[in-house]
Image (cartoon, rainbow, N blue to C red):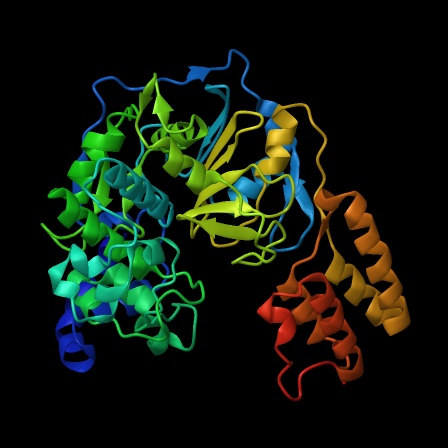
Length: 476
């Protein structure tokens, strides 16, 4: 962060304390979208490297040919060489590992294998692992305990009655606003921004209001993971960093010191975003889950917790986050819904990923600094494993193209033909209920009713298909 940012921040804090409730508001307004090195603005608590680090082998002939593998550009949808895509997303680390051997390792923008970088929301996957370990050790009694059972300060507050299971499922029902919503002042005062920049996490969490009953709809909330961090510290009697060093960081074989960013000096770990490590140590964490939580015969993370974290839930028809691959969220890990469905990954907001494909024992770590992200990992894994893989086609996109060219009769024919093709080749096409609803909003009202009918027929239990369209929506 340039010196001028520090100077201007200092000069404006005093005025902001009077106008907008203190320096936290200024920090949120000033930084807005952090970058992968803004962890340097936070104090940290260190986790010491393992005295017995795990070492990946290095391929005798690195796969430099991966630089030319064509991957999708998220901004244009066109295929570009991987090397160009990594430069465009400002990827400062990209590792491809198979069978514990580093096949490809690329660093840029001043980074190297010893440079620490922020994980952003990959921290949630580490927080989840710690909850699983604490549960297995009996330090957490049950996931159906309330947060208030461990943190007395939350009793009588909305978060106090939320269970640990609801926190892990992001179903707390507490208030949440995104930093991307509204104008600059509203973004700066959003819960998302305030939870990232606050100097008093506990006070902020105690003050969270309730938006809906706990246990209801899923909504991505950083505050749920922060409450779990508070619970972990109380249940274990240790700081999150000290506990992770003892039960996870050193046992998995971390080769470098890692850290957790704190809300203030001597304060609380930011367990939704604050884990900091090197690319290879992120890979070691992914490797632990690839091997069922075991390192050298020692069960570090309980096997049942790993299975629950990494298993795909086939009962869900719709992704929590709509992308072409579909993002299903379970115990703070993500699962692509596009077949095949054995992959899982940790995800951070600016392109931080730990991606694991158990079938081929392939592991990819990406650390980047841009929110223009796609999902090149299956394409790269196919290349290193000598397999053929193609990006899927969007059925709603094909239908809309036909609709614009020749009307509803053509759109109907394309929908029937492409869904029939998807039945034969499910990995070759994408169709989510949220996409069909969006399609209904882009066609004329009489045709929108038919599109919603398609949605209900294919996804009968999904709210996106059942709810009527707002009045006045749809192409005229």
